[in-house]
Length: 307
Image (cartoon, rainbow, N blue to C red; front, side, top):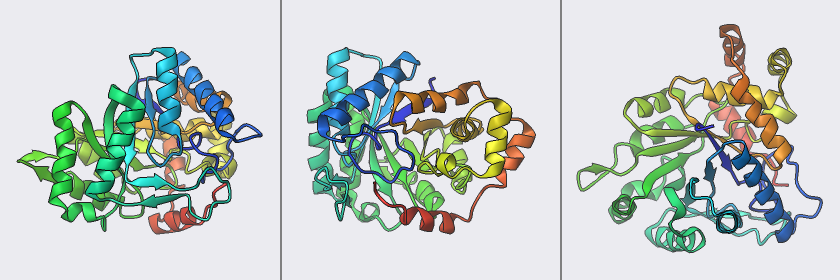
């Protein structure tokens, strides 16, 4: 399971844009903490040793920090992100759930908060949802501050979103501070609906960068709204459509780490069934035909409701 990570976007806050979440009937803080710990326990038992969180994932860092302290595990890789601030106030119907800001003050503030909650457990710190119009690209002080994290043994990365992901990946890996590359890791959205960033991720991997893939299930759409070809392949392999979608990620030649977002141990088990799937050439061809226009995919995603 060294190429699987569990993400807590769907568990650290009561509302998210993921379809088909399997959450407690009451989504108060104690219930969501217990649900998070149950998923983390199941993931650890299954051999998963990577957990991905973010400042904007509600209390995800707090929940993870508490779990690490209680269980005493020392073999977990932890990645987190800064750049978004959670403002939903634990309300399902909040008008705004998170606010983005890529500035030096926000980085300093959120890095301090992350360290307070996770201590020395952070292995990878990522700019959350870097886009081509981010002010980060024109902020030398921020770029230098990020690069300085590597001097303390923290890997520096970024995540991407939107139809221009490939442009961001290539541009971000060109950034330098003191003659050294700033970033050594990228986390992008790639799934059978939206594979457009694939060539850029292959280039990054070939250059020695770490590659993670998020939204492997297209925010749950590949399960709740699984197209018939995907369902047929899943039935043939004796697994659910989620396992096929994850297997498609793991089958990429650029060897990404697949970040899963289960909200219960049952969903995690269904996702992890991907480990025993071996997609045929015909399977891959059929899945390749499910690709959508990137702009249409992201336009659809932007209209998904928080629930």
